[in-house]
Amino acid sequence: MPEGDTVYRAAAALDRALTGHRLTVSDFRVPAYATLDLTGGTVIRTLSRGKHLITRIDHERAWTLHTHLKMEGSWHVYAEGDRWRRPAEQARVVLGVEGRRAVGFSLGIVEVVPRHEEAALTAHLGPDLLGPDWDPDEALARLRTEPQRPVGQALLDQRNLAGIGNMYMAELCFTSGVHPVTPVAEVGELPRLVRRAKQMLEVNKERAIQSTTGNLRQRERMWVYRRDKSPCRRCGTVILVDMVGEPGRERAAYWCPSCQPER
Image (cartoon, rainbow, N blue to C red; front, side, top):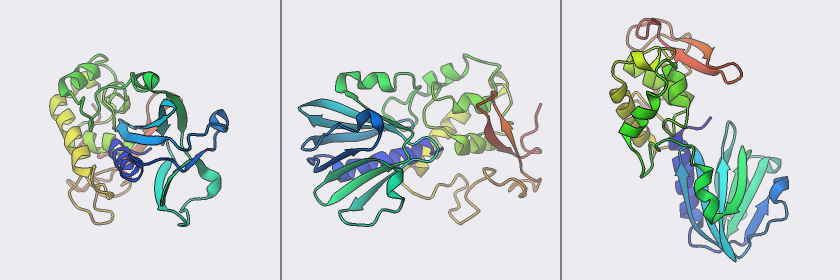
């Protein structure tokens, strides 16, 4: 699933391409909005909220397009006439302005609501790590409401803080020296972990190549994420991976058994 910084970059790309322009193409390829036509409307703004994308369009009335990439989704911006990099049958939304097309592929969520209902779309989210509402104290308070919850699950819960996916969860647990199943109450440096989460996403939000090690070379970018069976960069112990989490909502967790012992 894309991380918060990936969604932030997608929002920035859509904002640059569409904001201030009138729509010449409005094509919603999902049953609920198959007849909706916003052609002629003006795109006001696109922004991210955690892993959610909000695009505001004024067309007779104020509308908000809400999209979520989920596991496989992506937004691409093309010059008019360019060949799409993904199959057309995967397109869920096509928005066009003069000279450009924005295409949302395999989007997990597509909703169009009146602007006055926009706030309710993301009201459940905790503080956004890359948003103007970021509040580390509020994020800490939310994480601590369930002290016995495994820290990996707590970090992935967007109601606590918005923007962390599997990759950053694994990297944050490693750099904090805690096993992903460690209860929140037993994480001694939880404030430092939250600060580091903010730092990681801030560093990566403007670049397409994500790295938590500071090294942008292939296979050198991460400490543990997707490095199972490889040696730990700190101690040489083989990195492990396992599915953890609540039944039906398990996620892959990566860790070094020496640097992150399970207590």
